[in-house]
Length: 312
Image (cartoon, rainbow, N blue to C red; front, side):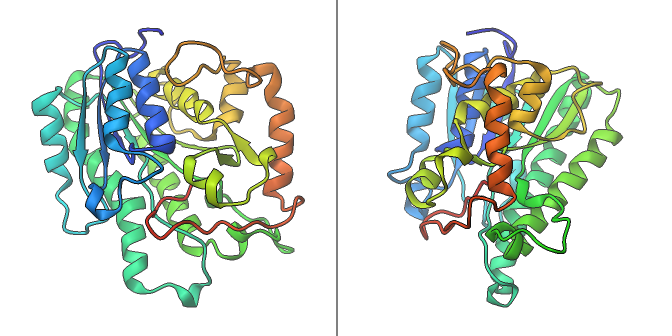
């Protein structure tokens, strides 16, 4: 374990499992105290795939403070300032904001209802936007901070016709569209805040991150998966990098780690992740690019009804 986040307070949404939990634990392994947010159990936020209590336990096992904030971030009446108020009262001012919670799915345009679209916009735009606005004054006062928004390759331009024979291409209007919006405003916010000591970036898995839900339900081939530790390491790099260099990045995890020649550690920081070091990444990226181009076929990306999170 290192100390690159020593004395920092992190707020991570969607952190009961998957990418959010991996990032929260990795930040803690580098010294951060962490507040984690996810839906309350009675609203489907905690399941066989993970709980906030488990995330808190992993952070505390590393000797760091952790608090669980059970909020349904999809609630359009939610006051996000209340979340940050609680973090500040219990841990201190937020230094590292990781907006990981997301909503989406892949459907034809006529199959979306306005209510469903509003929920996706709430999770993929309004929550990150409002949390960033609430945390920024404190970051500006301190002259440092980091905002990291978790995106997706579904946001990337399709470069057709012809179009890739892939679900994310054919049915990505809402999920891909809202993530593209997230990328664009993050880039402009980075420009707005340049030279203030605050960086703003978006990070996506190279293809698919091996979250508990995707592995259990998606049927995606193994070649498309990266370990959760890869996203966590890339997130750590962006949260702790030079704010005048690593800012305004719209980047995929393995591309960033390869560029930085950065070793990938397990999420608790205890040891290197076997088979996922810089020398291993070119081959992994090549296979993932074939998947993204549809060269490996199309696959079911449906998720259980209890989940509103899709990252691929």
